Amino acid sequence: MTPTNDLPNTNDPFDLNRFSRAQEKIYPKVLEELRKGRKESHWMWFIFPQIEGLGRSATAKFYAIKSLEEAAAYLNHPVLGQRLLQCSESLLNIHQKSASAIFGFPDEWKLRSCMTLFATIAEEDSVFARVLANYFNGQTDQRTMEILNREPQGRE
Image 1 (cartoon, rainbow, N blue to C red):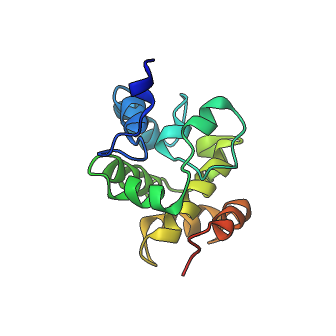
Image 2: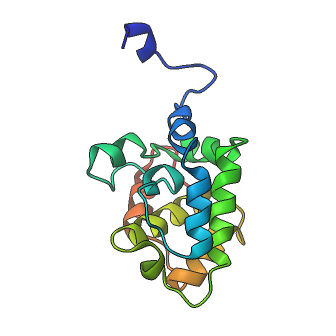
């Protein structure tokens, strides 16, 4: 990689393109797996991203959302935001299955973390809040909330 490739892109200051690149070829399979109610392949990090500070693997760190500002940019992105909404809505169409049955361990935790992150910045009755209500009795992820509450820009 040349040094100029390391400079931030002013059109993509959060490098959201890293998610677009990862989702490009696998997204149809993601939807298929969600429709079947069982995650079978490896895509959790870039479909349902978490706040930075939770995942320990290099992949988890690479796809971690670093701030509420980045989460808002992700949600407002014309492709990534719509895909996150679509995948989250798909979860609400799966009946009589737990998050554990759909995702397995530890991906059920990653889902809860992701939904907590995006519920924090979305409207009160967002799809993210509904997923939390449906799969986690409305309980947010405590570790995600602790990290978000430490953010310098704070929360209202």
